[in-house]
Amino acid sequence: MNLHLELKNGTLTAALSGDIDHHAAGRLREEIDRTAEKVRPHTLRLDFSGVPFMDSSGVGLILGRVRLLSMWQGKVTVCGLSPQLRRMAELSGVGATAKLEDEERKKVEL
Amino acid sequence: MKNVVNRMDLQFPSLSVNEGFARGAVSSFLLGLDPLVNDLADLKTAVSEAVTNAVVHGYRDTVGTVYMSAKIFSDGSVSVKIRDKGCGIADVEKAMEPLFTTGGEERAGLGFAVMQTFCDRVKVVSAPGKGTAVTLYKRLSQKRDGE
Ligand SMILES: Nc1ncnc2c1ncn2[C@@H]1O[C@H](COP(=O)(O)OP(=O)(O)OP(=O)(O)O)[C@@H](O)[C@H]1O
Ligand SMILES: [Mg+2]
Image (cartoon, rainbow over all chains, first blue to last red; front, side):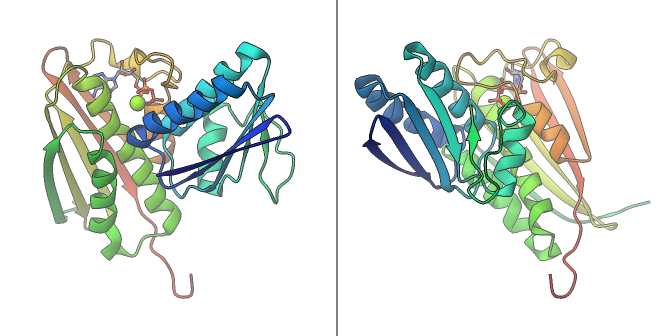
């Protein structure tokens, strides 16, 4: 499990890679939150391009960050979901309330 | 009558690092069936949910043993049973409702919903103080030539 964080024009991008399960989610959460709470970005962009597998812990990770960002009216954007990951997101309602902006980039607005 | 043509039994401590091991083991075991990638991915996800529940909820404040057994039947269907001797579930029906969780902020309450969506059938047997057994049933489509 790897995480790459980058801040640009007030958007914090978290590029995730590797399987996201309960084991991996804990560390990801801590590292993302530590930076997010410090810089308070208006947008947190979660990039799942490098994630081959995720279970409901990944959904929990997304929803938890939506909650965190809402503390300063920030929003969360999700992109790079594979078809399998997207099924998981849709099942959760994360995707149902969200607009799939662009099929190619599989971007979900939250 | 369908017969069991192959089986695999595993036990491991309820450490979160074993969540990946468990779904990988099931996946390796079933690879000989030459299943469709999506079917196998669905089952892997369901296994991950059940094992995580044993780790997170069943053995909430302790480390216990998780038992997993997978069977391949003569009709090509498979079952995977994941069992813990942890705290058990008082109201299984309620626990299986989507979004129900006792896990706090970081849990979505989706584990059972995922298992039910990604498998053909899910059986849950649980008793408070005794533990929980979750059995996942799924028919795996075989890859055809050229797929
Ligand atoms: N093996 C188990 N032992 C004890 N309680 C369990 C077990 N599995 C599930 N539960 C109970 O059932 C509830 C629902 O489980 P489910 O997997 O659907 O959601 P979750 O684990 O809370 O969240 P998520 O799976 O989305 O991370 C849990 O919160 C827990 O109370
Ligand atoms: Mg769960």
